[in-house]
Length: 333
Image (cartoon, rainbow, N blue to C red):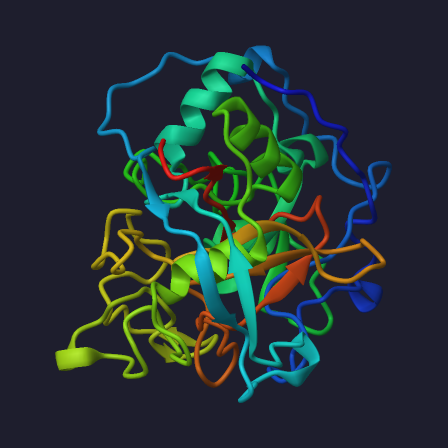
């Protein structure tokens, strides 16, 4: 059921003063997240084997269901861009055939089934590190780090950070089985979706599902962020990156089942974690498009938790706020 893919290895990190990244200190710049590329030869020797990833499956409530999106024409993009460098504009009519989309972001539990059956090793595990926001790291973990991203110092490369250890070796996902899997690259996401007999959604499909029949609206439910004074998505509440009040119920990721579904039946289309799509960012085919924003987004820093918003990462990138969901052709699962 698993399909082999060719993993691309780019540059991960250099020294503290010279780390390069698409993680901007300027919120008006073109990225929102960590797109630092990788270098296979210069990453830590923290390696994982297929045998280490073959673990006993545990029972849990499955969240692998899909809901159909009826084909048709919708308005993609916006004529009122927040980040022009992201090419959110213009608003244009796009026609798509019917497709299926996962109701939920892929959870740790669901990804664990894939790893248990195939012995798959993620790129973060192979490279030995991934990027984590400093706010969520333990004092012990931070004391071991001597490097950072110059343009976004809140992003730290953490040895041993991976999908099973989101905040590094001293963390685990024992109480987060229903949270979205993170520290997964585009290549990892493609491998999982292929194993499921699915694929990643195109950017157009993702945005059509996010809009849920509403053209010219910021969010899946409309333009008001908190209808009736209630939260409908998980973002950063407080002053980024210093304080997070958790007013929406979660400081970090929340369960993939949290918050109301859209009119099309999908949950957490914005916030929680960024989601990979199949599209290339430009014709240069260096970065892949991601959509939806994450729990680390805030209006003052990364106002990209909008249906029209978009950002990018290299296919081998992984980070603490980056996940995915799968799609499928047709209108039936």
